[in-house]
Image (cartoon, rainbow, N blue to C red; front, side):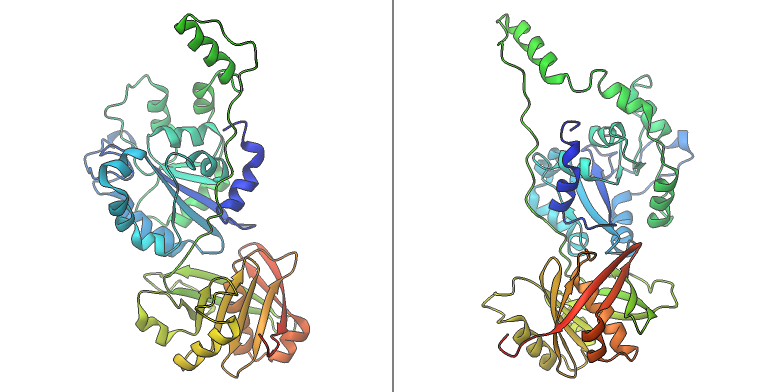
Length: 400
C-alpha cells in the first residue's frame, strides 16, 4: 500500500470521487462484535458505553446516506471476506440494498480494498486489521464498534481501540466527520507497529522464506506486484433526491446546490427545495411528484432513443415534471424544459460534479425568473460544497 500511494488520485477517480468530495469508507471485520456484527454485548465500559447495546450499522447507514450531501461525500464499504462467505453475496446485497440504491458501493474484499483504503479521506470501522491499516496510513478513523473483550490488553490493537476517536451512534454523522477532519492528528502507534521497516517487506520476507525452505535465495531483486487500477465504478443512485438550492446571483446564474439521497426528514434550511427522481426508482409514485426526472446512461442507447427523444417522452408521461435530464457522461447532460426547450449542459474545465446537479441548478434559475435565452448566453455556475462549477448551456439541434 505504501508503494501505491502515489496513485491515490487514480484510485479515487476509479471510484467516481469528484473534486471536493470526501471518500468515507465503512469497514467491518467478521466477528459478532464487529461493525457488521449482530452482538449487543460489546464491552464498552472503558469508554463510557458510547456504542450502546444495539447494532450500529442498521442505525448508521440510513443516516449516512441521508445526511451527507451527495455531491460532497462518496460512501463505500469494505466487508471482510468471511462476511461474504458466511452469509452469501445475495444476502449481503439484500441487507445493504437501500444504502446501495442511495449511493453506497461495495468494494471487492480481495482485489479492491487496498486501493479504496489508499483513496479514503476517512474510515468508520472497528478493531479489525483494515481499520488499523487505515490508521497506520494516517487516515482519520472513527470506531463504530470497539470491543476490548477478546483483545490482549498489551497488544497494539488494544491500545488503538482505547485511544482512537469514537463514533456516537445517535449524534449527527456529518458533524462527527467534520470534527474528525478538523481535529485529526495521525496516530503514531499503528504506523510504528504495522512495520518497523517500511518498503523492505519483499526483500526481508523472501529471505526468511528461502531460509525456512533451506534453499538458496535468487540473486534477482525481490519485487512486489503493483496494485492494479480498479475498474471505473462511480456511485449509482436510484432513490429520490431532495435538492436544496439557493440562487446567489440571477444575472450570473450562480446557484448553490445540495442534494440528499432519500432523507427521512426535510433538511433544515431556508433554501428552496425540489425533488429529483431517477426514472428507474422503485417508488414509481414519486415520479408523478418529481420536479426533475433523471436518467443516467449512454447517449446512443437504442432502447431509449436519443436523449432529446427520451426527454420529450418523459415530459409527456409526467405532466407535473418541470425538467427532464439525461446524464450522458461524466460532465454532460441533455435537459428538456416544460416549455419545450432542449438544452445540453456541459461543464467547463472548472466543473467536476454529477451533471444532474447542473440540471437542478438550471431548474432553480428558471424557477427564479431567469430565461432560457439568458442562460444560453451566459451559462450557469453551480456551487456544491466548497467547489464552483462553470457550465455552458447550448440548444440541442433538431436532428438530435
